[in-house]
Picture 1 (cartoon, helix red, strand yellow):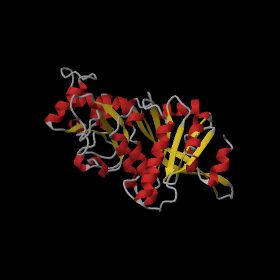
Picture 2 (cartoon, helix red, strand yellow):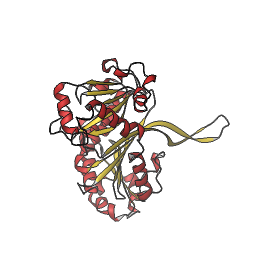
Picture 3 (cartoon, one colour):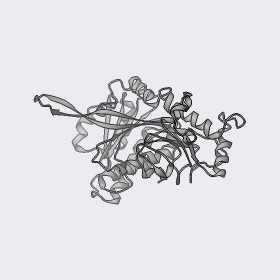
Picture 4 (cartoon, one colour):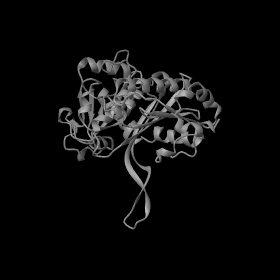
Length: 351
């Protein structure tokens, strides 16, 4: 884990730094994470709402951008800032500054015109604060659903999916809580996933729902963002939304009304070859087993430019969806024994 993981934060996305050298600890990724702090962090000389490029020890060294002071800077309103010199603060070694600079000269930084930290702070502001809607992953993922799964609604997760559905058993009869059950569930899910999404060069949309119930242990939610941070992502976004749970409750007038819950909605897009699918499925299988690291988020996978979708809901099973049954038929026959008797007749009727 990185230094940033000791704090509550929102992951805003990533900045590409095509350096010839590693810029993230123990990783060859050239993507540096951008965070918004949700609490004060004295060791970063940062307060709630400030933006960090890099997560500190265990990740990338930190550039801290004070908010809203940086907005005043960019709007030529420095008279509103008590200490302008503190707006941008770096926790970089000279060597790391060189590594970063060597990379960012390839993406537009001109050392003779502007200091690196100023150029970079302005870039982060433009990409993640002032103009976040441009090329928004959230917007693009919604457009994908409208195109391929028009009956699906992002704020109603229970509606996600296609016209035809397969449901396979993963953990089977192996004992709950056992290592063998987690391993079997993970291996089966990986096998189905890779056979279903055969094109390793295809891009995958990952949509995840993280329940913001304050009574949940928030530390359990960190594993999925960590896995994505060390992967090569095409895009990433987090937003807070209100979701229909699929259940109903009675209001004070005795009327049945939908029950909603607050969620963090995570959107990522990456190539199949860069997707840490085994780690993700192992994390999902581990959650109900009470072992860590685990992934409590509800995750859906959609193949870009396709009507294929996949969800592993826990160690018990997974769903595969498509709008044309011929895309599921071979898996139905190949893994017939993994279908529970309870769902067998319903599934057989589709084929």
